[in-house]
Length: 362
Image (cartoon, rainbow, N blue to C red; front, side, top):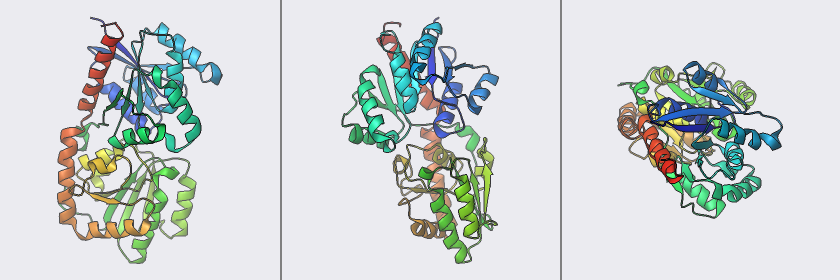
């Protein structure tokens, strides 16, 4: 039986949300029917882990940039790839250029977030130009689909909603009370769009009210220096611990009492799924795909970039642990039933099979 060869293409495989999703998808794809392969031009820690676990990881020459698509085209032919699955804008750009003229290659473009909020003009131009070269577009949330419709001014008839998933079995935690002092957890790339400065300012407001808490912030990124300076300037060095990148987030979730996502924009963050699966009460910005999952019976939504409202909401949660844990339990039930990575992988496998048949290889 021919195994359908799937090439996942991403710029890098460092420890970010989209890259972790690729890693989990590759690991949970049925290897009796499919041969998942990963290719990048910048490598990364998750690529190393996949290689160590026996998966095929390929290197696309990073330079010269103008010829990268030609190198990728050669790789696709040499590896006899059936389906090219591109992740993030740059991979979608080079991948679809490489697919030109290859009528027997299925091409998927997955949109993991609000791609066109930054570098909008150039990205919008190329996304519209290359749209016909995609066999199918997928998005991780309804909000991402709306963003694409509103920004690109077309309604992609080949768009599918396939939401992110996690290994839910790693995040099964029972909890019945808060710690004293309460432990607040946040995790993500330390970049401006994640809004961790808003969280630090909110915690400063709580500290001025003599509220007792401990905050554990997991992640790394370009804003780390600025965030450390803000922590020191606001006198929170003994209140907020920067943990750096934490590969296995499950034990950290287990120690927490409250999880906070203060982002300015998101697709459907894996950290939200992980926190909810862990039974953690969650406060998150009402942006992107977050409100689709974190409904009022499952957690608290706050406006982005508003530290005062965030501080008030944190107080509400900490003052009402029974109510908070009841909401968290509802969220946990939802994630365990609907956001298992095995279900996500199954939906992609169905799509791979459909495209394989459509291109005349099935």
